[in-house]
Image (cartoon, one colour):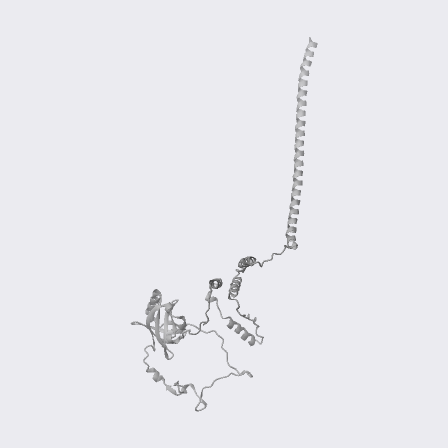
Amino acid sequence: MRSIWNGAISFGLVSIPIKLVNATESHSISFRQIHSEDGGRIRYRKVCELEDREVTQAEIGKGYEDADGTIIPITDEDLSHLPLPTAKTIEIVAFVPADRIDPLQMDAAYYLAAGGAPAAKPYTLLREALKRSQKVAIAKYALRGRERLGMLRVVGDAIALHGLLWPDEVRAPEGLAPDTKVTVNDKELDLADALMDTLGEIDLDDLHDEYREALEEVVAAKAAGEAPPESPEPARGGKVLDLMAALEKSVRDAKESRGEGAAGQAQETGEEAGEAEAHGEVRRLPARKSARAAPKQAGGKKSTASAAKKTTGKKTTAKKSTATAKSAQGAKKSASARSTASSKSTASAKSTAKKTPAKKTASRKRTA
């Protein structure tokens, strides 16, 4: 970055060579004045009103206009003799807490760069001293022909210089507050607090210039010979007749934009219904049959399906029971048959055993 001023920081007996660099830049789109009929540039020429002729930059000097209109010429030599010790020095005069600085005094911002290797040590010393003290330095410096007031603070690993307006350059806000006596009640304050909490915080890095982006689109479209994009019509703000209603609606809108409106709206609707009922404003309507038909129909289908499943289950159980009974009967029959066969076999064996001794006895008799 190109420096715009070279000098030194005077810190007691310590001198720190520095370079002044712009800390901010403008991204706004600027326009040229043109002749509407042919597009020609409109230029301003510096003309001497006494001689009625255009003059060059080398012929232009400075002059102070007195109250009666008299011009008093001031030369660069006159300015060089001014008793201005801060012409090339940022002179630190005090160290104060940062909250002592009124934001209304803030002006342009600059970065201070160390001017070479010899400045590294004192530069770092001042930076670390500011960090540890948690204070800012108040300084005086001269820039563009006038002495200015400034504030030095630490930004990252660098030291920044904020130009400050002199205290007598800040106007007092007299006569700007409403002169009508207004009373704000606690409920209104609570709603305002709720709106502040709902909107919450935001990362400033996420903010951007939407107007400049839209303007760039218009310029690009015109350059391409196309029609500029149409923007949606902005919402028109109406008269605020009821502050409470406006606050409540603002809270609801903020919640809905953050995806918190469903539950909150249901709760608020219930509360509103309760309040209306208390004042005798709620009329309960008879229930619609069509609204109940769908749930019943759906329930009937489920019951039929369930009954069908139960019937099928019963049939299956009955079949299983029948099969089990048949198996049991078959088993009993088999057991009975086996028992009968066993009994017959035993009886036959006994009968055979009785017949055999008889035969033997008869044989013996015959032999004798």
